[in-house]
Amino acid sequence: MRCVTGCLVWLLVTCTAAAQYRITGSVKDEKGKPLPFASAFLNQTTLGDRTAENGQFSISNVPPGKYELIVSYLGYEPQLLPVEVKADLAGIAVTLKPKPDVLKEFVVRRNVERERWLKVFADLFVGESSFARQCKLLNSEVIDLQYDASQRLLTASADDFVVLENRALGYRVKFLLISFAYNMKSGYSLYYGNPLFKPMKAKNARQQRQWEKNREAAYHGSTMHFYRSMAGRQLAQDGFSVQKMVRKPRVRDFVPPSLPDSVGVKVQQPRFFDKEVSYLYTAQLPYDSLIKPNGDGYSLIFRDYLYVVYSKEKEDRLYLEKHKPAQKARPREQVSVMHMLAPEVPLDGNGNIGSPVDIVVEQYWGWEKMAEMLPLDYKL
Image (tube, rainbow, N blue to C red):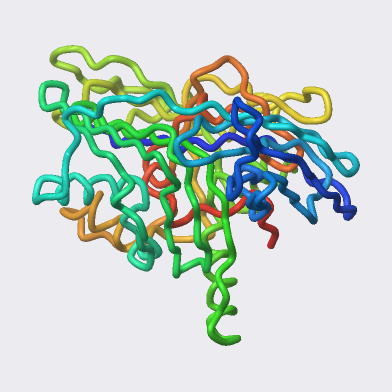
């Protein structure tokens, strides 16, 4: 069984200049009443504010670029507003609608069964890495868990922000969870939402240096690093190897084909329960098979699967313990697999994906979760 995962966050942001601007606006309900203490933030960044008593908000130090402004308030439907910052933006008026009253049936309550599913949720949302062990969900009581035994499907939702304290990277993350699903039949898990990162205050200079070191480690080899490297056309220099992989249904009594070395294709021997066979092309993919120019950015255009090897860092030992326990292997290069669900996916010059719902990652990237996530305004 392949372990496939998706972590989707909605944002398109390009930081191209040193200038910084301010976004101001107001948040009201349908009756025109100001909503104090509503959250207004730029998705997956460290930039945000809470509304005052009069419903006004102000987000400062915003670099130029395209963003998604997220506005949320407990008991109301959140709004996602695309904004482009070229100068100060003022007078943004947001009206929030109350969420419909929904009777929550079959919700897993606080008991032994809930604790069991909460552990599954945390492993898939936060992760199981060394960094994940330094993370803590601060308000797990806001998470509603539902398990459909007939479908073997675990889902989760939350009416308020899920707050994660990441003591490895030095961030407190407020995650507006929109959807979470884990299909135990296929091994497929998917969650998406809108995170706001708040840097934590270090106890001393030593802790701050450790956070910066850990952030750099989380960045290197990540999807963010990969996208930025691809946009800058420096994959090889940054340690990435990218090959084409094709999967085909496995037929009964499958026998691996004998291919001459000149063909340049390696058949990956399937395991007993695999339903597909993978064919790995040994040549490195050229950039014109990966991306093409699109306005002031690019579009991802690759077909089939990308087999991505990052050579400058080794696998986490906890990844080995979970995925290769019988091999007792030493950590090797990080291997990830990626494929698209759409013919093209936008990619801006800063390496940010415009439609993350159309990207699915597996293996090492699929194993890394919120514990390794950095804000998109992170710079080395």
